[in-house]
Length: 152
Length: 152
DNA sequence: CGAAGATACTTAACATGTTAAGTGAATGCG
DNA sequence: CGCATTCACTTAACATGTTAAGTATCTTCG
Image 1 (cartoon, rainbow over the protein chains, first blue to last red):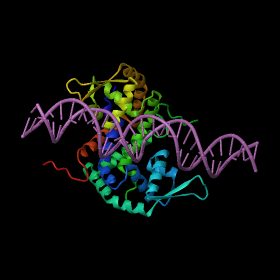
Image 2: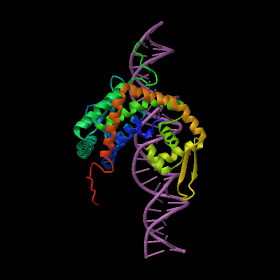
Image 3: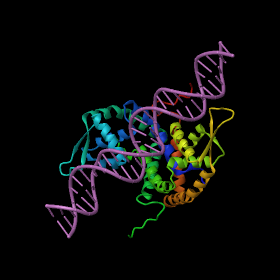
Image 4: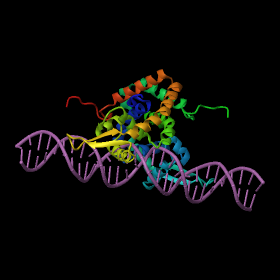
């Protein structure tokens, strides 16, 4: 069997960890985890979203998101209110305090990203992301175990 | 600020999740998590290793590994014994039962990997892994925040 | 209308990620 | 030798990943 340290899952895991290791100290200094930061960034780009849509955007599972939103709400970094039309839906938005926190983190975050880009090369980075996107696409909505059946 | 869904960390996260989604059902059917499988695979390749070395190989943090080894030991999938020369060190090896479990999981695991390779293309896969390795290397042992100082 | 089903989210339970602190054993050095 | 330091690992505490079950609301259709 293949040397598993050279397998695709391990390559992806190590690469991502190498990248995140750069960001974590800065986020931690601001009292944020990687996932909390993802949520704030997703919220900053829009006015308000439903929880399900936010989960899709921030790439978090529902249960994780529920817990994190509870925490962010308790810290007054976000605001929530149930939708008028559908009482099941909860609309989430970033608060004033959340915006300020983002503003304080963004500079170092941007700097770190720029440094990574500089080291790896902007062109290569674009190529890498293109390939990652293709990989994701070619595995989308189908298990490699059972074939795609587009006629059922 | 950059659309964070197109950032490198998110690209890597989504790509890895797309890949792991293929494997998880099979592993789960055999009562193994991704991390437990990594450990068994790492152990299968060698005779016995220290915990610290195993953590490096399986790319797990010490505390996670401690817990998982406790569990795998309770399930008799591995064996442990303290080193003679140094009582601090614990030597870990895969058990007979562990080897059998691996043998029962390996076929479907191999098949899934082969299918991923077929879909994405063997050449592209090699290129992708090459780039991931370079990325990892160019970020190794240094924070993108503070420059490398190789003269201290 | 009203019961069955679907939907949006939350809770629960267990496994791992992550950092800090703890424990016991080896090492270095005066 | 003896004691401070280092080392290998474990435990603790909290946050998230993952699957299953639960809750409230909405929709559908007889």
